Length: 224
Image (cartoon, rainbow, N blue to C red; front, side, top):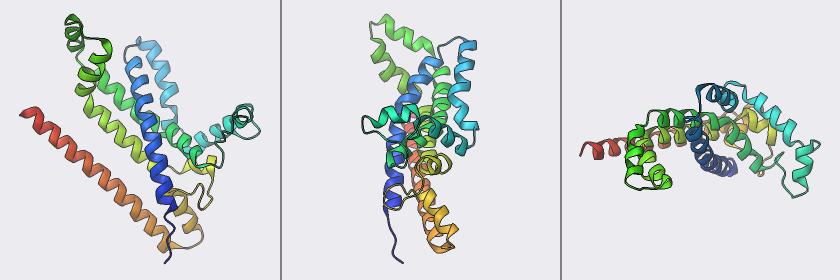
């Protein structure tokens, strides 16, 4: 059986890039949202976590409304050679939108549980806010940050609905593991579909095992 490995490469590329973007965006919004008044934070939470409760196809539909070739924003971006519809980096956008709420919620919970007296102590010692954030706050919140990052990567890797709506399925161009599974199943190629299902399962298992090992090491260091 001749297997085209492009879906694997494309899925890993989309998941990795979107995960990096989600990491920084999620931390940024989570950090500032945790410091907002409750009413404002409630409104912001609804806006930022809406993709988590909407069907992925609905998210993909909204992305098409924004970035479609005949939409104002899509036409504007096309002038600079940027096109999100039917391109692999459109998959990055779709994965970013659907995985962002997972990173945001877990990171925000970690920041809210942080003991601010540690930050105040650092300020009394003359430490900068940047130093306090990266060397005190982030290490203290690493468990929540790590969990959010892993969930975001796994969600991006398995994304289908928004991805299929925005970039479709083109072998060698936009095919991902999830869209390939559906196309092979639709054409009654159950062996090929099962192969990609097992590949996805193996990657997800390896990622989760690696995270569990990392958490175990961190706990041992903390006890030591």
